[in-house]
Image (cartoon, rainbow, N blue to C red):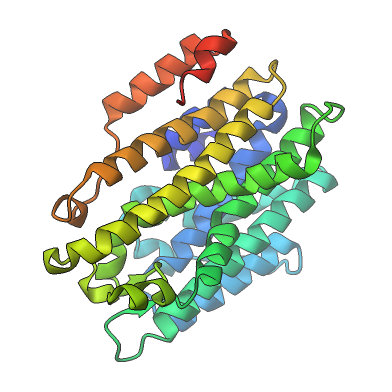
Length: 325
């Protein structure tokens, strides 16, 4: 599994390496399986029905409801990425690793994958199945957007929290409800940043995650969101969503600092996505409508500086708190 993780995700592999060994394999495996289901769902060259059927078979295997071997050779051959091809070719290895976890850890991994796959299936049904002759399909309501961010990322914060709590600090005196809620908001915030950053690419695919109940009162339509003509209407709404993402990430920072101080490895693993996500938000807020038509992201050099600053500040609470101001 370690080799597969290293080959399929260099960035997450670095995060994984900093985690304590007690939770590293479980979180790494959950990531691999989620990447595998995501690869199946995102293979646009394959008809919708075949993708849903493949997702269904994979969901049943992950849940332990089937033992039928999965052969994704056809799907694997249609991947443009060697990493995604490898994920599909090695799916049985990932499933075998799942069966070797303890019963309690298997349940946590299966529960989170069940929710993630439900979000992927809903996404396919909503944007591919319902598209028909329409050029663009938006979400309809804020509730749908919140539900989506929970299914594909908020539930990961929940899973991460339960896994860490069980293996690393089961007796630590924490406000359990708030801690879990902040973990969910942490995941939602990261996903909302992804949605806002990836808006141009999603619009090209005919997908709009910004709901029509917000667009229509502002006089906006999905296909015109990035038109300079509508910038005065779009940018204020876009920045409202950036403010929402920032509020979620600040809950993620509170979550990070609620962790027992001795859990510095987990604190680092949580701090990096919060700090990089906040830098992404600042870049998106500063961008004009022309810049937003491209993909805005934090540079690798800036990521390295963020990681180094957090490593140096980690032992010193005063410096650590200043990382996010």
